Amino acid sequence: MNPRELTADVVVVGAGPAGLNAARHLAAAGHDVVVLEARDRVGGRTWTDERGGVTLEIGGQWVSPDQTELLGLLDELGMETYPRYRDGENVHVGADGVRRRYRGDTFPVPDSTAKEIARLTELVDDLVAAVGATEPWAHPRARELDTISFGDWLRRQSDDEEACTTIALFIAGAMLTKPAHAFSTLQAVLMAASAGSFTNLTDECFILDRRVVGGMQSVSERLAAELGDRVHLATPVRTVRHGDGGVVVESDRVTVRAQRVVVAVPPPLFSRISYDPPLPRRQHQMHQHLSMGLVIKVHATYARPFWRHDGLSGTGFGTSTLVQEVYDNTIHGDDRGTLVAFVADEKADAVFALPEAERRAEILASIAQFLGEQALEPIAYYESDWASEEWTRGAYAASFDLGGLARYGADQRTPVGRIHWACSDLAAEGYQHVDGALRSGRAAAADITAALA
Ligand code: FDA
Image (cartoon, rainbow, N blue to C red; front, side, top):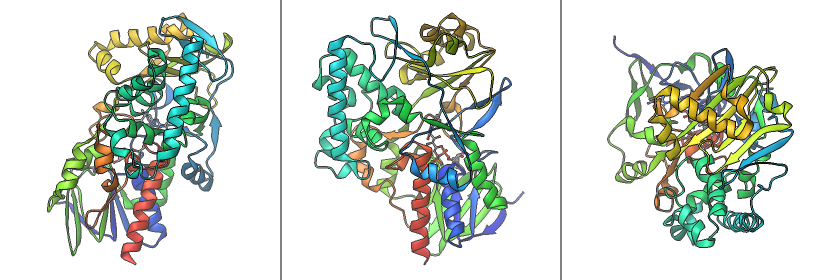
């Protein structure tokens, strides 16, 4: 069957939050827009679906107070949020393997380590304030900070290993989902700056503040509903032909002729599309320096939120444990209790090498270290495995390797002729989050509207 031929002013590739927000703003500016999405659903890395009789946030879910673009959109769409359950004591498993209950935002570690954590936090906060999120590559120390791994940098500041691994966790395992030796200090600074400060990242009550009633994917579903039949699902784009006369975007089912294209897919997938003529040397190189992190988001549901009856919030942290973070993730209005736990980077590699049943047993045993034996027997269990997804290939998002941000950052969003780029992984504020995706989509739409005026 020959692909259907369409014409539009702008084609958007990818119906995640970035692509859909680009399309929304383009349509609002009066442009005829078509969105082509590879999957049979919208939302990209946000996906609210049922597994084993439980509604789960398989991908992105939390909203923090700094995410004003997302909060503004939720308001505009009349959508509501609810707070994450956090009453009661948290649990920390220390480097000594001992489980301790605590309240407040200081981990129950030896006094000297607590002081080092506070000192390192201040150091990182100062760097973040000096460098900022908008153009980290333009800072006079950019190259210096981009050529030392965050892990090495921390160990140059402190010889307290537990303090270093604790600080590293907030950015390595918890955000970029790469080992702290695999990304630079500049990249770490961008991650923190994009959330307002490093302290914000370490405060789970801030960064994991609220959730969307109906699920985060419903934001994309609402945007797609506004666009109606301009959104084409199950339509992976294969080729973008571009030149002075316009663009021709080819997929298996639809070919669209337009003035401009927004490529709104994760950066490691930019090169899954063929470009004719090929992209310039700089883009070919730059895109090879951006890679996805790896994290398993584990969902375990119980007949009751048993930890609450034990005076626990469900929140737990450990740098030496398999599960690095666990939270109460019970869905709005559900009487059952759901926990979400995260296993990142090399620990994820190790458990992915195990047979499924063994992996599940190890992960549940690790959750039980925090919350007790009852965690071993969930009524439903599911592992989000985004790295196996053809149209994502990792989680949560993409970041540069050592030296990449200083070298290429300034060009990452620069259009190539009529090709524009949008993705949370290219954002400043809201980097790697839905908020950043929305911002980057809006920015691409504004550039195109200006160009077409
Ligand atoms: P996204 O990847 O979402 O969308 C890109 C779209 O392009 C996809 O729909 C894909 O199918 C499509 N596509 C790819 N190639 C294509 C092709 N060739 N042709 C057509 N379509 C193509 N964020 C947050 O704010 N709070 C949170 O709590 C979390 N937590 C979290 C957990 C997990 C497990 C994940 C995986 C992610 C998060 N995130 C998050 C991150 C958040 O989900 C992410 O930043 C946004 O979804 C990114 O939106 P984009 O539109 O930029 O890309």
